[in-house]
Image (cartoon, rainbow, N blue to C red; front, side):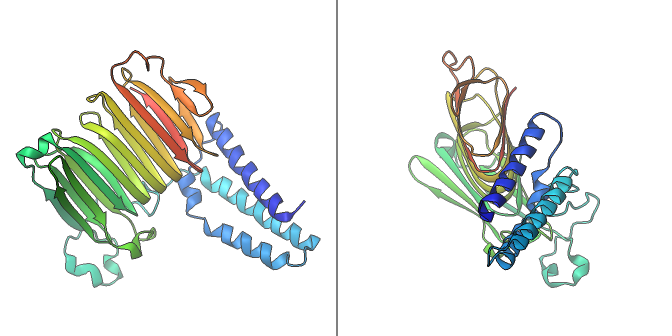
Length: 324
């Protein structure tokens, strides 16, 4: 058997075993802990190249031993409860004073924990309430949260450690387009020195379409009281928790993720169908019946006047859909 196939086989057995143990409640495994040690797989690849150039048996044993030791460490580390609230950096304490002076960016290391505050907003024009409103969100190393409603069209309260943020608005006769961007690509994957927090406030009058592209980070949105027609999420190493309401006849939820933890809550009175293309991902769809491979639906799907369509596409992710 080729060593490459053996290594891949061991990796798949490890991932499948962890997912199985987690699904049966034997262990609590925090994939965010493992994600931070992804460089060890580069080390494993390097060992494989160094010791197996001549396909020696000794080199194969060394490569497999390094892999087994690494996976054992990751298995142990993954069961430890994270000491941070996000996937990318250490959690800052709530009682730490937040420095909002932009001039401190170039100060000494004593200010490394300082966050700068920024507020962005767009006013609500009367005609906006009758239009379809599209909110495009992009960034990385950010924790996004929906923090209630506003009399304006949108508010964004930002606590930033790094990066530049912008909010722009474009309008047509039938559509309002809002673009919220983190513009600093250099720090998009900067996990080590803390992340950025963005608290949105949205107006409840418009019908919202929300497109979110998140390199790494977290999203926690409670849309129960908002008219959300479509929510689209494209994430890498991310954690997402959303709650959908029943104010519209049809709502679409589309999720495409790499290594992610995705939780979706939907109203019990709404009929829902889930279509999945999830590879090695874990799935927990409480209250759904399996119709065919990759297709699940609620018992009231055909009779309900409010319907939610969920499409899930993930590599190594955890998907959970609950009804409330």
